[in-house]
Image (tube, rainbow, N blue to C red; front, side, top):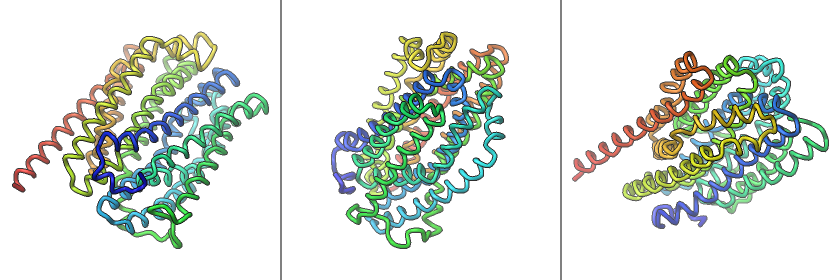
Length: 450
């Protein structure tokens, strides 16, 4: 299981189980503890705290963006180099990834902390929600070196043949977070700041776990003396591939700013709180699909590096099928029980009703999102950064942003909700067209080679 070269020989179905199930469990657990945090905050602090937490979503997207810029690129490059039998090159990527994660955390986290109030007000905070958003983000920003180290190295751990150990990182962090959050919120009375502190402490334990893996010398790749020395070619490759998820999160940040301000105009703070509930619910299924794609990534990267194209195609086909099944299950549950799942987060009836109504609109074509995400990750995993970046930008900038500017002007609050499924459908069509283009290109090259 810890030999990465089985990626080129073992059956695709078995590999997806071995690599994706741990990643899916890890991402599901991560999403669940975000949901549980929101439940604790909603019932322990109040509906305005839920709205304050929702205001932080664009800033959290920025935090994730600067982390993924390095973490995703580092994990993809390491798996491709292992596929090329370049173990030394994969080892060098580990040190570069850690160094870049720490630089990004210090620069981004420090600057944002200094101007936090201004940033949050720009992102849609009101006088009522700003204190909650500030208390939460101050702790999160101070902990970015910890979270970036944990996420960056954990991605490489998974990509280099240790998916179960990578899953345990998330499992350990979540158990700690779920245990500490209610104590800090309810017993100590620390409110939303207590939820953030519980998250930071749990990530610190996860960081110690992944560091011990790369320092013990028994892993296939490890941290070596002088790991901070970086090579320009490796840095360029990491940023090139990481640019796709980076831009995706940056554009998500921009979009959520528009969403928050539009919700504020058409529904007030409670509408932002409703979006916070909807976002947490839908992100559960999105994170499960992300776990699937994280498990697919080393399989795709290795076989692309080894030029085993039939295995590449089989992995993609199976991944698309599983991704659609995951998001279809979310569609069914949210359409049948919108009020029930919304009521988990709060006892405020007005907020529940607003969230349930918006949820049914937002998931209208949710089954297609699974396919769109898997196809986008396919291009990222084989190093086609430009195509992956284009697909990352289409839903957010080309489709969702115009929808947010047009639909609410004549549909009000429903127009904000409606813009989301419309953009999802158009993004799915774009991804399918891009995949068809790639398949034709590969067939043409194969014919020329013959």
